[in-house]
Length: 113
Length: 113
Image (cartoon, rainbow over all chains, first blue to last red; front, side, top):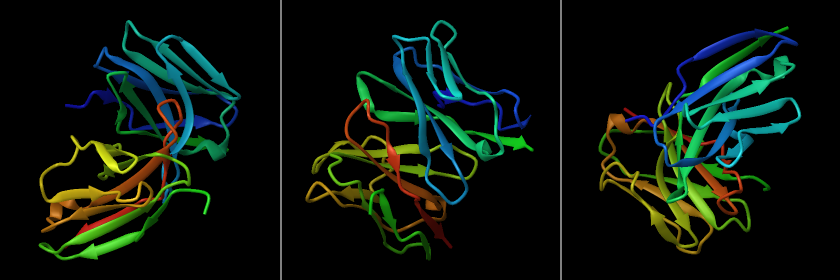
């Protein structure tokens, strides 16, 4: 039973344009969400997080939006750069079990020069 | 080193053999996690340590899997009587606490022939 879903396995975007990566979850108890980026042959690296008390968190070119009623979050990258090409995972955890993170299956982003 | 270190990076073994995978977390991180990632999937939680004790081992798939962290630093994931279905990337991560992101190692790729 996959509690965090990333329904788009891949996304291709032109350099300079916006990349939007989506993530849906089913557990209404999730209250902390993270995005990770993974390059080939490397472990995932933390990108940005958001807690359920917010609906937006911004860090440079990266913004995460959270829609609790829809159980949906998205990661916006603007402007996209070729170095952003990687697999992006969203992850979620709940306060009652905060050290157990559930990951989506990832979206492979390709930013074309 | 500064990051999470995992050894071996690659392990090929035969069905039925015993395997140990090692994780050296970031110095000072009290929390340590093991995740497993199969091809095309996101990381799947196995076990979480806080200090020396396994605070949550609910993700271990069966009793062939066991993990230890005897001195609260290095951890070893042990798999007995390996099966072909155990083939995956085994990721270790450490963190300072709940709102600190997980820092992942590069993983140990296990192949069971």
